Amino acid sequence: MINRRRFVGALGASALLSPLAKAHTTADDASSEAGSASRLRVSLNGEWERYIGGDLYDIVQVPSSQHPVGFYHLKRNFLLPRLKPSERAILHFDGITYHGRAFVNEKELGTMAPYVPCEFEFTQQAKEGPNIVEVAIADLVPEPGGAGKPELFLGVNPGWEAYGGLIRDVFVEVRPAAYIENVRFAYTLNRDYSQAICRIGVVISSSAKTNLGQVELILLKGKAEVARARKAAQIDPGTSQPELSFSVEAPSLWSPEQPHLYELRVSLRTDSGEDMWNCRTGFREVVTRGPEFLLNGKPLVLNGVCRRVSVNPCSFHMSCRQTCGTDTPADGTGHADDQGVGMQFREARALPASPLHR
Figure: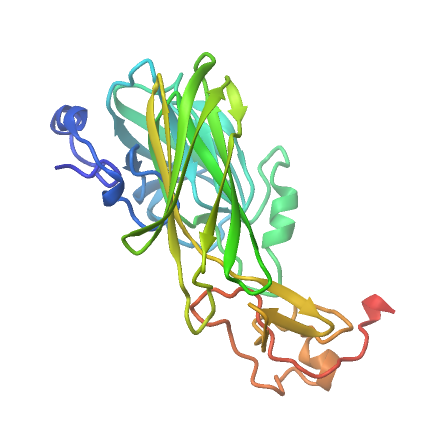
């Protein structure tokens, strides 16, 4: 069975398009990353041609962080099967630096800002067989017309070594006419953490006529089903967001010592087909009490990860020169652990007010 999310784009069209028509996958084949298990995905990672001044300069790997060279174009070919009338073609970038414009088959789709995911629909430009994707990148100087100047001001900075290019995954997905664009997961824990009241907003993008759909979610802990909810919803053209709710008894809370995680699976069934979406998630409560951080009701000591960014008069970490008169960390500032707590600070003493706050 072909895994449609990872099939090799370098195969010839005659070798590829026939088996794709018969390929299928299930939710059990999905990775633990946020995404869908029911969509045909064409990876665009690998070798891209780089053109500078209209001439082929070299070959670069995607994703990668390149030394900035100014303004250039990255280009490669990819293959697509014939799209059905109920299917849509989406080009997705997980992240670029610092300013970019995306093209498919010489049609400009839109612009991209640094670091954040972007995606563009190109159903009207998609062709059966070979297609061409191109990205204009400004990573050191703006485009000739000036586009990209604000993004470069953010990224090219003497405080760190700048880098450019397609720094994260790039792929094309074929999705049904009505598909799950995103999922918003909110919850409230009661005082003794014995129950979580959960609300799910399912963001649906549809190019089809108004029709009824069925939205269903399943929350799993390992292979055990923890919660399930379903709802009939009217799916209108454009964007709609049906909401579902459920509760979880005795949720396993996330912490650095015990990073409990759940898998959230959401499915959508409409006249145009079925779409599925999944991600890992968890339950935790982070609050402040005076200068203290509390995680799940317990004090949390936070370790510093960036001594130049945060300045705050109340025990957030400032630069060593501000606090100690030297550029050498006095507290052995370290970096965050690999459990993903986020911002972490080791500085525990009260600090003098920054000039920015006086």
